[in-house]
Image 1 (tube, rainbow, N blue to C red):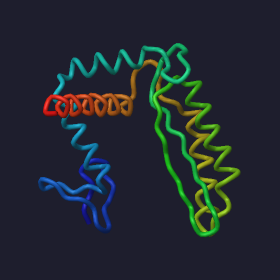
Image 2 (spheres, rainbow, N blue to C red):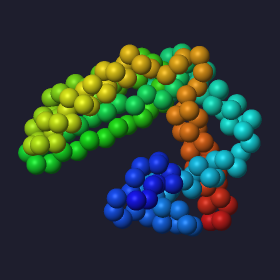
Image 3 (cartoon, rainbow, N blue to C red):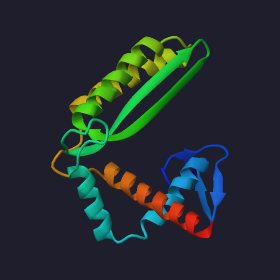
Length: 167
């Protein structure tokens, strides 16, 4: 079995190959390209940007930092169809907690209605949100998730700049 070169997940079927690497899907392949582009910037510059984001105001509410990555989880089910997602957001702790509580509440109302996955996933997603509230990122330093999102953002800006120069 192959592993995704970007996220490390096991690829059972399918996947996307590029330059002797295998990815889950086009999204992981694109993220790998953005990470590679973002890594063209020096480690010092990346660290400076990460600390600037971490110490800056919350992009959601404008309140004071520290700012980091908070991931909320949601499951919605309708009879035989169950959809789940995890959504990371860069925000202050207060906005992160609100997103997690919202995910837990929506999952609690909309997650149960699918058989069998809704019934199985709903308690897990509610628990993931509640545990995330009590185990937030360390406020004294940026998390690796924040660094990764900053590198992806830098990579996207580099690629968009290259596209604008060509066009």
